[in-house]
Each structure stands twice: as C-alpha cells, then as structure tokens.
Length: 457
Ligand SMILES: *Cc1c(COP(=O)(O)O)cnc(C)c1O
Image 1 (cartoon, protein in one colour):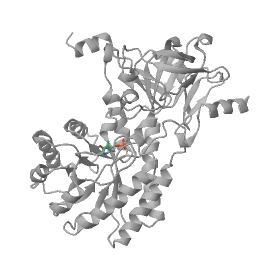
Image 2: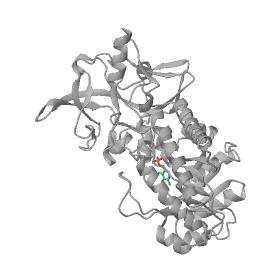
Image 3: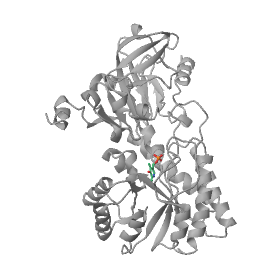
Image 4: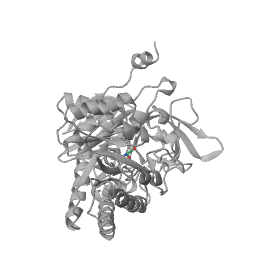
C-alpha cells in the first residue's frame, strides 16, 4: 500500500523539494493533503466546507522561503569570505495582500515599492506600528510630485527610504533629499525571457549614466533585467555587466557601495525541466561578485535582491470545481472540462503571457489508470478563457466516473491578485489562509452586490 501511494505522489510530482511541492501529499483515499509541521490539512474537506473557486494561502511556506533565501545568501557570504553584506527587499507589487506582506517583513525582509499606492501601504504599516525602524524601503517607478512628496514625508518621519532615480527630472527632484539615493541602469544585455524586451524605458542607458557621472548621495546601483529567468546565466551575466558599470561610477561616486540586482529568480511552474536550485544560484552570485570586484580591485559591494515571484508563488494554490464537460470538436482524444471560475479573471497570466502551471486533480489522485486528456475552460464567454498547457493537455480523471471532481493549480501566489478582473461579472474567488492547523477566511467570496457596486449598480 505504501509503495503504491509513493507512486501516485511521484506521478503527480508531489513531495519534491526541487518543485516546491515538499509540503504536499496524498491521503489514503486519494485526496490532496498539505502538511505544515505537525498539522495536516485535507484540502478536499476544506473545499467541501467553503466551496469553490477558492485560493488557499500558506503563510508557513512564505516564512520558510524568506528565511531560506536570507540564510542561503549569508551562508555563502561566510563560506566564500565575501566582505559585502546581503539585503533582501520584497517587491510589494508581486503580492500586496497584507497577509502576505506582514510575515515577509517579520522574517527579515526589507521592502521595494513600485508605485505611490504601495508606498501608502508602507505609511499604513508605519502608523500601525508594523514597520520595524530597521526596514529599508526602496522606491521604484516613475515619480510624480505626489509620490515625491510622500517619499519626503516618510523620510522626515524617520523611515529609511531610498528613491531610485530613473530620469533627469528625478535627479533634480532629489537634489535636496540629503540621504542616500539609488540610480537605475538599463543594462545593455539580454536574457531569454518574456519581459526582457528589445526596447525599454526603465532607468538610464549605460552610456547616459556614465555621462552623468556624479549623482549626489548615490549609494545604490540598481537594475532589474526580467522576471522568471529560466537559466542561471541570465542572472549572472547581467551581474558581471553591472559590476563593470559600478566600478566606473564609483570613480565619481565614492559612497556607492551596493548593487541591487532586482528580481528575476524563477519558479519551476511546469515541474518538467531541470530547474536551478536556490543554493546553486546564490553560490554563483556571490562567487561572481567576489571574483569580479577583486579583478577590478574594488571592495566587495553589498548586494540587494528583490526576488518576489520566488518567495510568494509557491505559497498559494487555486482550486476549481469541474462543472461540465464536452468533446473537443475534431480532436477525438480530448475533452473540454469547464471550471467554475475564470482563468482570464483569477489566473490572468494564463491568458496574458501563456503561463504554464502545475495542475492536478484535488481528489481521485490514486486513480491514475484511466486518465483523460483534457483542455480546461473558464466560465466566462471569452474564447481566450482556457488552459491547454500550451496546446498540449492536462491529465485528469474521467469525469463520468467521478462524483465531484476538482482541480488544483499550484504556485498561484505571485502577481495574479492585482491583475485579476471581473470579465462577465464573475466573482473573484474566496481566499483562505491555513495557519497552525486552522483555516481563516481572509477575503470572502465576492457577491453579486460587491461586483454590482463596482459598476455603479
Ligand atoms: C517586478 C520587479 C521585481 C520582482 O520580480 P520577480 O521576477 O517577481 O522577482 C523586482 N524589482 C523590480 C524593480 C521589479 O519591477
């Protein structure tokens, strides 16, 4: 019995550290379990009680990932005798839910904001005494007068706040800031990823930045190359390039002491290819920073990473119920399974960037003999509201033999909430948190009244 159970786990790619599924297991009756220390959640029972579509968030996973990230950097700093320090800044845009942000900060993260409204959240944290005075806040994004005023206000209230300068106007705006500032460089280097566009407007080109030369109180050189970078090289090459720029900038900016490598560490969403491990990635980063700065005969820079997706994606799953099915026309071997939610609305990247996900059934997990090749469709009227795993298929049990079939999407904790919408006026899912063996409703399911109001009804 035990051996068989392990086969099912392997088949559905559960219980594997590399895939971030080490917390998940299968019950004797074929249902998905999540294990948090001594606690265990039977996710099917939870759905029976709360209904679908539902997102379940596991703060433990976030906490472990933040700690692991910081510890790994510090461990390699020690092992490789690196003289600079490491600082982790959580980029709030990746998931601004309070229930996500607070544990991240409590576990030692600093913050990075991309807009004035995210900075308002920082102000809220300050006023609610949830902002430890050691937390440093990096401010990215185009800065209008209101944003600049809020930065100044928080600075005057004692927050360690660092504007990242991205234009000539912003240089002028922060001439009287009198505290450390950063500058963003648009590195002349490409990685193979969706966001690494041929042309972009972020920060100064290398040439322009070197022409500017001196920037008052400059301490951080910042860049952000892309997100979901699939190869270690895509992270290491930009770092080398940045160290060269840092070296040249330092001549006129002696207080420059930190390189902020931005976001980009990836998640093995598809659980398919061999994906790099955190340890390997961090080792390469520290080794590169050390070797390169020694080659240029400069002090080892402090390092900042703003990895968001890496920390929060695996901390949430999304569950839908299959409410109907039909054959796919002219594709005899495939069927449409219709879910009670919407990919376009709740997992927007499915539609926007053809994101691939790890998808498994929530129940009937020990019944892998008679699986069907399935394409999933959402409940909106839109022909783009579907998930076919990139024209391939998803393996799910035969719905005709199942009484109540549900599907689980893993790694849905990054970006999807703030991109979510209400196409066809479908409701946003319920959001639950599972902590210390208990289930808490953190966002109730949107009712007709809630959505009607948004549209003036
Ligand atoms: C989006 C963004 C990040 C986070 O990127 P991930 O790929 O989620 O790690 C970090 N820094 C900046 C400036 C960003 O724009």
